[in-house]
Image (cartoon, rainbow, N blue to C red; front, side, top):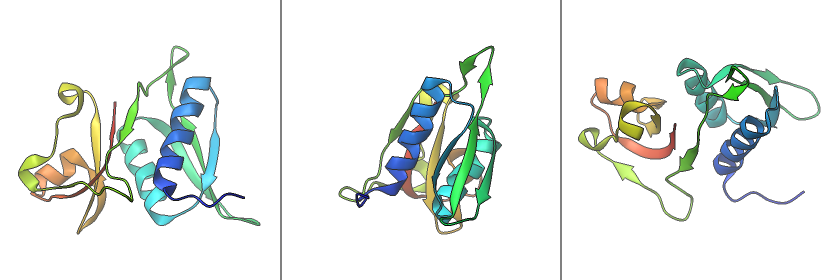
Length: 131
């Protein structure tokens, strides 16, 4: 198996590919930060649910959300990468697609959506934008 240099990008790409292909569910290798991102995607309405599946390898199983046969996810963009980190202050949290999307941040209080970070006046590493 190949070594991944950016597991979060791999996770987000699996999500985007599953949503575009119309797959009812997909799996990804488990990590705490991926589970936190999945929690945010569920809270914001981009996936129906997710679960941690233990076995030979611990994996996350996610079910992308579809409305009238179309994916709720339009697109997403990984912002901060291992080679180029992108940190923002509390006042710099972006509005994604004029408020129709979300940003996902890793803050000192954990991984949260941009809206939650703004309410708590927190900045951090901008992981991705989802719309």
